[in-house]
Length: 429
Image (cartoon, rainbow, N blue to C red):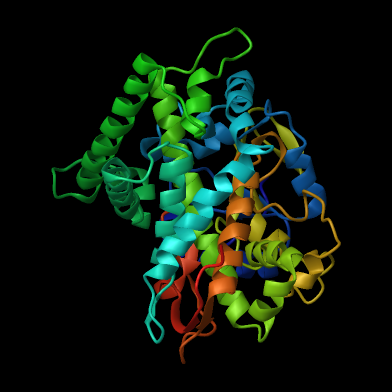
């Protein structure tokens, strides 16, 4: 027997999940406690947990029982069948070992200059007194960082063409309805899925051309693609062109949209806290705490999911094979026993304190924790530091208490977070 949950028809629950996921999670937890179930199109009844004990249980699995790749498969049409997010078991671990090295160690320092340059480029286009939505500017920054540091396109016409093609893909994929399998039908060049597939083909052609040229010429640089081209698994085998393409797609989707949205939420909460931006300019450690606290209150993705490969006891229930189990990031990050006064934005709670991976997990956990976590956190710190150093922003009247709205799998501030430029300062060397 499964836990209780809202008695909504699956289609109605899915619509509510698309429009108001935070509210659905909160209402379900209040009414049914933990665990509870949700019905979503494309899945059997989903069991939702959020306590540190149950999250730890899920994340402790070695990937043989709680299968993330099978849960993520609805994204395969967007990211590709060969993406690391679609893999399970030994194949997932093999790919993960290949992908990890470019995102750790001193390589972060090498990427920092590209991150600062992208932030300065955006800020240089602003004028005092301007009012605009911040999220598109954060998207531009993170897209340019990915195109430079991951794809390896230096500034110039090819870089701009790569940005143009990738932006079109991401904008077309942003419509949440495309996540529903029955919407993934190509009904011609003017249908939503048809337009997306054609844009994806254009982007894939650019990546395929770059991969082919790099293999033939042996040209390498300090970008992630160069490292992946030379990487080998334990048997000495390189990644195929198709595997590389799907991983580049995944890094684009995971490293661009999520980071841009997390940056936007961090700015939103900072602007609602008087004096915080000024304080952050003199306390570098505070910037990391601001980023983490923003991801606690408004996780970009509200859940991480698995599907049971065999029967398993979870949260006191004997669940059959095939049951989806999700850890709710949103609910876990608002547990009062872990986070006193949990709805209050308080970056100080992250200063000098290390939370367990089952209490704070905006990047997932266990063997499936996001490969680009260190990259994303470093980029957030670089970009936020540049913003606080160079710009005084404010929230226009009426733009406080902003709701979240869905953009593909992410949840961003409604209307992209309108902000006003109060003061600009030149970039320090």
